[in-house]
Amino acid sequence: MTAAAGSGGAASASALDPTRVWRYDGEILGVGSASGTRLVVGLWRRSPFGTFADVMVEDPGGRRTLLAPSREIADEVARLYRFDQVRLGPVRVQGSAASDAHPGLLVVSAPGLRLTVTLGGRDGLGRVLSLLPRGLAASTSWARVVDAPARLLAPGVRTAGLTRDGRRATYGAWDRRRAIAVEGTWSGEDLGVLAPVDPPVRFGFGSSPRAPGLTRVVTTVRP
Image 1: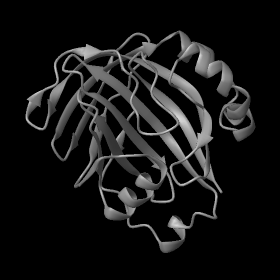
Image 2: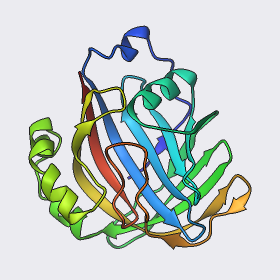
Image 3: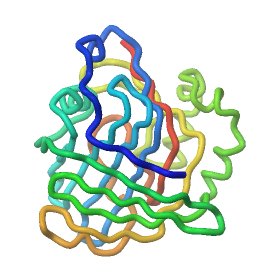
């Protein structure tokens, strides 16, 4: 995988229409750190806003911060999830491919954040997900079917639920790779070494698995 996401394009007014169905196709990176800070990075290759990246940060005290590349994107993400503050500015992600034999890197820069994550091969969940046909894994019907098992297998994780503004959202996962190391700073403080995403982040109905990793997903939001 090669990941690159920048400041995102300006959305048209229709892209913010809550009566439309919108899909976000890309990856979600979830990692914890020894400092207690947990981070969820969205790398969206196809979306109503074009290609963009955003970051959700929860610090050890539970303060939730959204890092977004534009006001339009921040407003839409804040309709879906809950935050205590928003920081606007360039959000850039550069990466190199990871495989079962060779690690990869994701380098994230955003307002107040510098993050480098080393990725490994597929974990057990990734091997299972990779067996699913992409069309099935991305379907909203499948996401609703597997929601209950997902909650049992990965406490805090949901694949179907309601957004902050009452729309229906699903996460269709179809691959996953382990995160094996992390380094960086948040608001000038060292993050420390990689740790589980524990306690679960509290941005909305969906969380990130406790085990750090990069999940390929299609997110669908509908009225």
